[in-house]
Length: 177
Length: 177
Image (cartoon, rainbow over all chains, first blue to last red; front, side, top):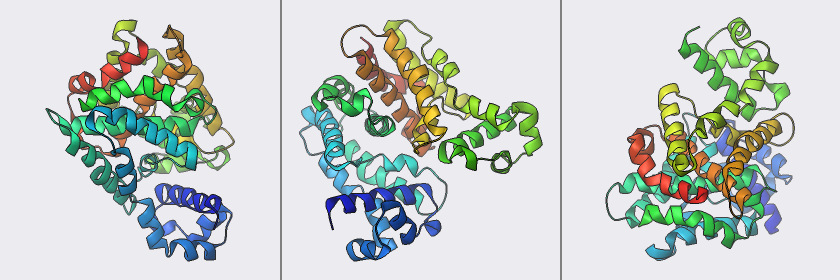
């Protein structure tokens, strides 16, 4: 399968599982949204359950975002988020915002986000209010991802990643200190 | 009508117009979600069109968020966002994130957000990269709103608003400088 097909499936799956109750999601619906066959999804991602597990898993995102020393973590996280989106057309985190519906498996997406991303940042922090500061770090990253999604030709979506980091990293780094 | 009823209708209307194509939204559906009658919505908000206009309008939000001198604008915007949510159970901005669907009137919600909120911040900025900095200001505010929506018992949703501002305002203020 081409990368284009893989990304189209992942994007459609993220949309489906974040916006609909788990029982309402079908591989057929995801396939139609991604413009591929349901058989192709099964071949490359397995069952609906295993596709959901990929959507609900933020461990790879957390590993990428946190792969820097403390003193450079703010800038690194921003550059990673922006560059990953530019290269893959996917956001590492923002799907959690769309999983805000109540009940069912969408709560699992939010729990994984908290356990795998927010708590991983908290574990890197020293000093007071680590839990609040970690959540504000992920808040700032989610806002960046949401903004790049909202206006794909806007200033942030098109700016030099280093220029975004110049402006946005000092605040993030101040939460790490 | 009680405030509780008004807020339930507004919340249901925001959800409906942000998540569904305009033609798919019905007052009956909003009424069911808000647990009121459609007649009550018509009585207090008028037609579907006028209810949409309220959902798509960010002018009051912008006025509240920007009602401070430049040197205090970051802290003021954060306290306004947090306190408004605590008092009303509604977020001033975050509905724009959920209007990310393509086509139709949802694009209007995003355009109004850009014209009424992001550009109002840009107009307050001096120095280089005002458009990028303004979008990053709204990004940081959207991330805060999204985070308080996602985990309603989490550290940010329950912290003292002044403690949130202590942590989150320096970064926002650095974008204003």
